[in-house]
Amino acid sequence: MSDIFFSDEYFMKEALKEARKAFDADEIPVGAIIVSGNKIIAKAHNLAETLNDVTAHAEMQAITAAAEYLGAKYLNECTLYVTLEPCMMCAGALNWSQIGKIVYGAHDEKRGYNKYKPQLLHPKTEIVSGIMAQECASILKDFFARKRNK
Image 1 (spheres, one colour):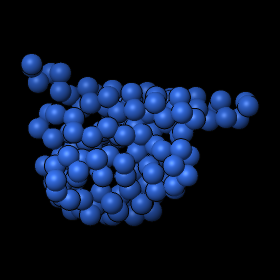
Image 2 (image 1 turned 180 degrees about the vertical axis):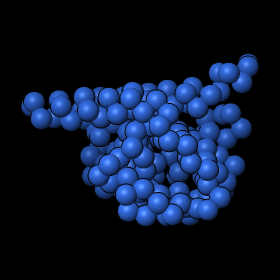
Image 3 (image 1 turned 60 degrees about the vertical axis):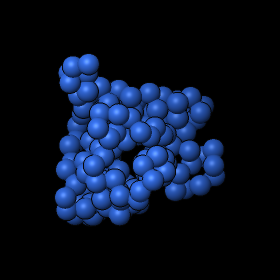
């Protein structure tokens, strides 16, 4: 397969599929995947409502699944694709995992880690933001509009 199929947009579309699963389950629609060597090794979406667990964010679920898949706690050769800017809790966990790269879609003006502590991530972690930001923000806006109209 050509590398064109393995662009940031390609993997963000996969993260959006996870966000749609969360949306359908009445969870805040955030999806995450972790990639190693152009292979998806973890897929996750928010499960906070389902599990009654405030720590069950998509990123946290993906970190755990990727570490289990690799049999290692450090993800320095991996890339996280997530539809929404990580919160401080997730940024802290990503720091501890030493993730190599984070690609996120929509900015989180209220709770994103950049608002509070942008240096929270590991110093070697590469950050890319705004990939498919409109699509990533749209699913969140639709979700909350639906909630307000109920």
